[in-house]
Image 1 (cartoon, helix red, strand yellow):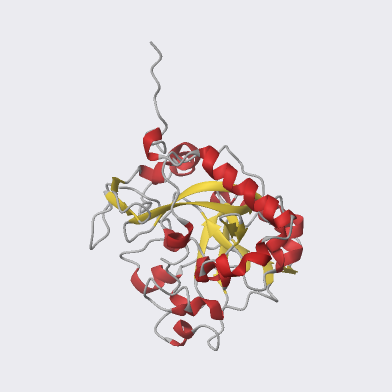
Image 2 (cartoon, helix red, strand yellow):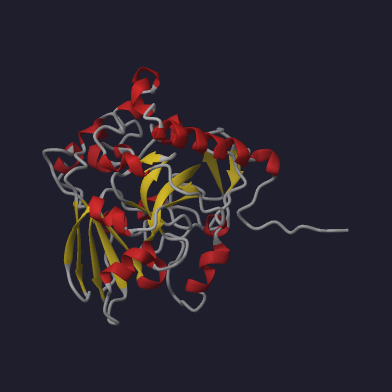
Length: 323
């Protein structure tokens, strides 16, 4: 008898969206883009998508090839839900900030790479996209607030950006910062927050195969409310680590103090790896609510991605790895 031992990230096939349905949807989108039909059906496009894709010159790049190494045996979150239930404190502290986030100006957009690198540079986002191998990955995303979703991110491996930056051997961390513009983002007028939003990874984390720089979602450019035009996806970590709307990557030998660490270091540590057995100070992390289905499901260690990342932390002693 053949006994199958499922991976930690797998759920029963009965819980998963049909891969053929999703792939067929992508083919339809590709065909529509090739025939110039997407622009002609504006009246049929839901409002939350119509303004989210506005004036993004990268639209012609999508959809991109699916990397089927990263499978998620769980139902894909409906696009409308994933693009209207968002955290983006620059535009407000409530979940329905997707309308306010349309104030974000995504062009021109320049990314600075500096610090311990061979040559510091400023690169336009579209020039960066042209240099990178774009692909799509299906990832689970887990918020520290105990909700989760499953989405198809488009983008490129972060290790490719590290390779472009060419850090020196002394660099141990990559610090990421979001934009800062109080005239555009009303949340940044709240002086008690330590703007700009800042967080970081070790070089080993940044060059892990799983770590992904996101530029698109659901086969289209990344919506503003989801962190356009460039954000991080590190799916074994809580969502607050995954910086949105990045404008700067600084390579350094000093561990950064992140936005939430500065505010509430006793609740939000640097590592923020997902562990169902380590509760938040105010709630349990043992389970999560899937925002697509409303179902309550058990949370998995490293969000089910331990086979990719557990070795990074095996020799660390005395570190608060899980919050």
